[in-house]
Image (tube, rainbow, N blue to C red; front, side):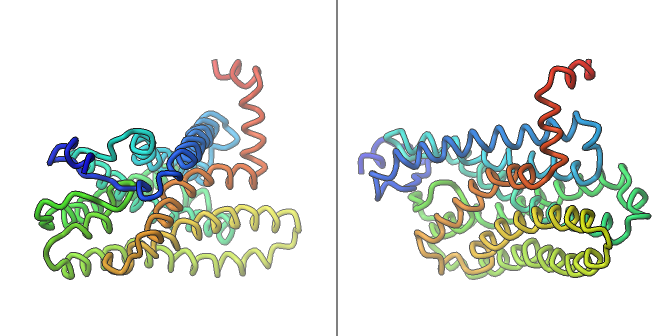
Length: 314
């Protein structure tokens, strides 16, 4: 009741973990450390991908796009979560909530498509090596990247609008830690079956279709890798693909468990855990997955720490 009396009627109240106050301080520390690692890791990947000439390839162009996505992804939610975990009020303004909903959904939608394009890039590199420079030329890569961002933000505009227009009859208490489609739909005071059906169709298109294409692409990649005679080349191809598949599995399967089913069927704790996983854990781990499993990126990071690297850039 104290929160209700102190907050504006235009605010949303994010309960988050207020039912377990003993968790708030440990979670604040964990989220803060994760956010710092996400910033450091993703900014490092972006910088070395853009500055190191040895990483001037379509693969690292798309990896830097993924890092930019993850950087924005965490920034759209974590700072507000940290404020709510440490402050007495667990609120977010109406405008802030809608902006968070739109940006988070747009970035998530963009990542769905980008991961599929990254799989196609690996397919072209491994299965069509002689034609790879032609297939993945610079102009086409830029167009594909731009198309993913435009598609993601367009999808978010539709889904966010469908979510926001649902009447809430003054309800503004969300049992979540940021503004997300399932949490907002639970506040609706009317039948949301039509909204849920529309959102499930869009969610299936953006999640299941790209995932199917990725898995199908890797069937062809696996066949091509098995035909490579050089053990070193085969291991390098496998290592690169394994990093991408690990990122795909962490992102898609948690997102599917949230968005390709009716919001009314979500359990409170499971929804929070899934959202934490694809909203914080995955964007934080992505750069380290690509860095720790990739010799080229590790070598580029070592070069970036030397004085000679920056002297050449001047």
